[in-house]
Figure 1 (cartoon, rainbow, N blue to C red):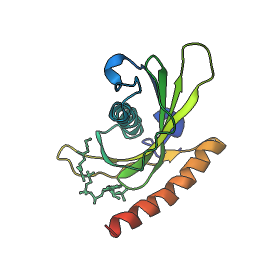
Figure 2: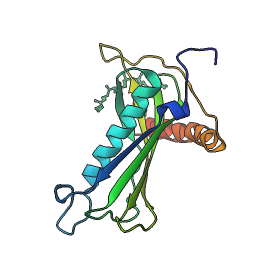
Figure 3: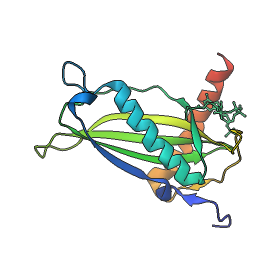
Length: 159
Ligand SMILES: CC(C)(COP(=O)(O)OP(=O)(O)OC[C@H]1O[C@@H](n2cnc3c(N)ncnc32)[C@H](O)[C@@H]1OP(=O)(O)O)[C@@H](O)C(=O)NCCC(=O)NCCS
């Protein structure tokens, strides 16, 4: 690695676990979407800041789909890592799984892609160093991130 500011994708990884408590749920005992979005945003922000060593702000969140309900008492695990750095922005991927306490396998509850921008003390975007993918999975995410960015930029231009 020539640039000392570059990080391996694995160095940006964040794994957080939450227990779904009554205050996190609706009247049916399902996890509130807004609470899950908050947890996703925090995990992703930490990954972005690990990648850059800077304060990073959320620029956008791609479409979020809630595949199946997460229930009161479930254990929710969020895995976040930086997929690719562009110039001042980067894509962070977050995979959310939920598990009951009775030993059944964890199920995929959600996945999200967020764009974060690294900023300086005045809130201006700053150029950041690339993250280096090492595994096949990381390399696939790195390639896919560029395609998603192109779609995002197209979408912004047509708004
Ligand atoms: C995000 C922010 C810093 C971008 O600043 P800006 O002056 O609009 O910057 P630019 O237009 O030069 O874009 C800077 C980068 O952000 C990216 N970007 C900006 N808006 C974006 C959006 N809606 N979605 C995806 N990427 C976005 C640009 O593509 C560019 O990426 P690149 O440098 O890697 O090519 C600014 O809009 C901001 O401060 N927004 C509020 C952030 C915030 O408060 N978030 C919630 C709390 S953390």
